[in-house]
Image 1 (cartoon, rainbow, N blue to C red):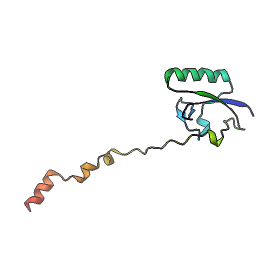
Image 2 (image 1 turned 90 degrees about the vertical axis):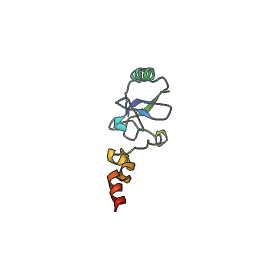
Image 3 (image 1 turned 180 degrees about the vertical axis):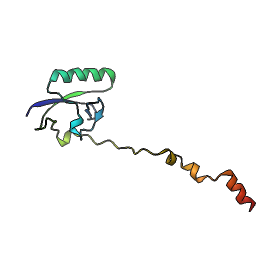
Length: 109
């Protein structure tokens, strides 16, 4: 097995290939490199764009497919997935309020 380097922020999330922060459940989507100097360069680049990030370089072993082997203790809590709400369901007040013509016609009866 070879050694890989991955980047981790202060919340415990790992840097992905698309430069977004992932929880590490999909190891294939993580940024990984066998070269420590490439990891250092990317750490500086990401830190320059978002100076509030505290990034660490985490050395880890690669499995037979070349993916990083992460311990369960290294995994952060997964982020909650937000289900998108269609526009029709987003405004429930419009469905419950009667049309003005409906209320006027029922008052006349």
